[in-house]
Image (cartoon, rainbow, N blue to C red; front, side, top):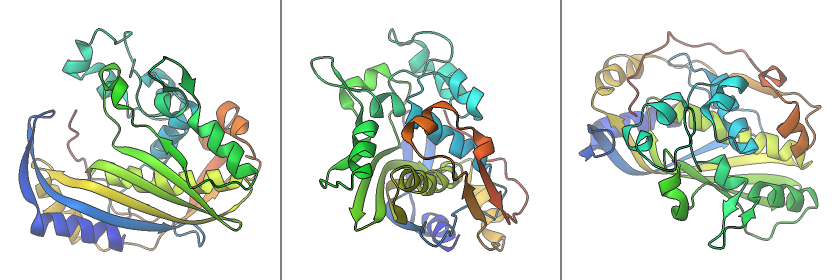
Length: 283
């Protein structure tokens, strides 16, 4: 929470106004932010200065790891986060590659589980990483990326947190996640949870101890219509202690994660929080 609130205050104090073409809104923006999450010691980075819906964040990441291409699949697992981008994004609605209602195209996990080569072949990046790490192999290139410029025209949205680089030191697994763009009031509370969850679940299914997540954000911003709520409400609240995140110990393989795992296999204990804040969402 200290890192999160310091970044929010930094944007308020130092941010520069930028006009965003995609959303048609102004953003108060800073460049470069570095956060870290201590998975080893179970310090779960769940925002407490407003109620944060962690289940939707975990469900979304599970959908990425499964390579979901439909907002309907994300809804079934427990999140509606892709509904608007799939069905209310004017540019995507007019895109000839869109396959119909709820299609998100080649976004996020579709790329990570089926990287399209120039020859049209597919590479399952996640499966290769899990296989290497399970054997204790780290070739300094265990990178799960959702970023493929060659298919940007086939997706409703370019990935924001686009790269996850796993590193193995002894029996401890670390994660460096890079994010090109971050809606801090709405998106960052999701992204922090997802980065923590990704390291925790990958360590578990590859039989390693989790270490730390290092989270790099390039463009961190607060939209103009979010700023009053951030300044006058959230930044005036006192945070509570971090809660505890628990994963079902029976999840042992990537196949488990792909097949039978649901939100019932995860729980958070000791979550104290302030009232929710309804920040505007920009499509």
